[in-house]
Length: 266
Image 1 (cartoon, rainbow, N blue to C red):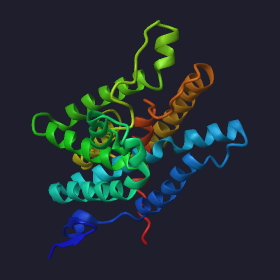
Image 2: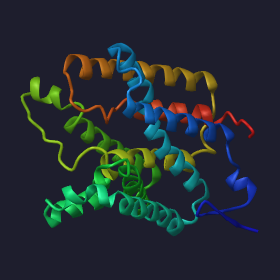
Image 3: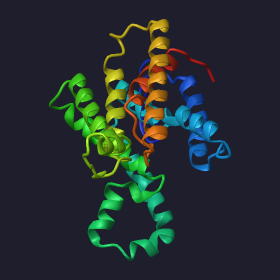
């Protein structure tokens, strides 16, 4: 008999078998994400930059894993979105007393943008982005194949990189000034690509062969690409934002596939 767990309909064991490794990693990555904001290695620039590189796949991993386990079941769409919206609304109300002064100075359009797109400019952006990214992916699946959805989402990730992290390159080398229109940490440029990746992994999990050596090799190459990308834009071009990185997508792909095959029982 089906049960309801955490607000999402749970189905027979063969469809919803939990992966203990994923749960452990989510706990570790939650701690690492806190470290992104508290800067535990701020006393040393190289340790701080190294920590930044390591933690850049943390948030994408949450988007990918949530999407993967949802589309492995493909049930409970309303419950999934309802849970995200309820968390977002409740925490927005909790934050309201602290936001009242800044909100009182905003026009209506700015308030709507803040709450319906920017995620209230707090850590709540993740909930808002997750709902938008999920809705976009689900809608596109009605008209496109999973592979096509993933390719389109990668184009949005590329656009996001060009207008944010890569903007110093386009301005200094190509003399093209691009503003960060619509922002970076949102459901379109950030959540959508990684949600689509999780969906694609779920849809093709039976077709993909798990070769540990190739997965580790791909992960190593992707990590090297991220190090090079970080060196180029952080050290050389002095980018002001470190949110979006094109190399994080393949890095998250290989990392997720590696840990998915390691099941630690809790």
